[in-house]
Image (cartoon, rainbow, N blue to C red):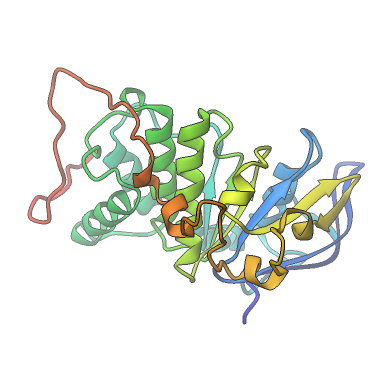
Length: 283
């Protein structure tokens, strides 16, 4: 299977400070990879190196067909168009609607045909369960709803890899669980890999994946520490559903619809719903 990300003996540094030494890891399609570690250990820096915000000081580092050690600034937009990036603080444009936020991204990444943009926005909002919230302003949405919009934004260009930097850090436990379940389901579809930094180790048993620990300028695969009895690392990495004590299936545990929905925001003006026959409004 092809490797979407491949780092070999990589050193990362910022100015004169060395952040990582001797990093070795790779990511393949459909994998769900956790980055765990203490605050300040470098999880965000590692993600930044993947989308070329932090340069690679030495070693071999490839993302898709891009050699990060030789990457020119003019190539960075093309690299990032193949990545979906999710931030803890949402980074939505608060002066425009959800639809207008997504239109902004599509136009910025080269889309020009309005019907195609409308269809793509409709599809990604449906994928994250936000199809009825397209005309809402971000500040009228709950934190979990805003994070779903951010995930929809990350899916616009059908990324091969989603990088999620503490996506549940500002959410309550149940909402965070729903967000991780949504990302896990996206990876299980097989074509998109997800690399997620987190402090919440309790998620790993419900949404199994490969676990990489960031510590002392090193990156270590510690998946075996989180394996249930009788499980193998190969099963974890390929997303095979895991057994539970109550005999429920992985799909039962991971579907966001199975948990109590968030209390919706009610405004004086009723929500509009996207339909296949109705064009999306311009921002």
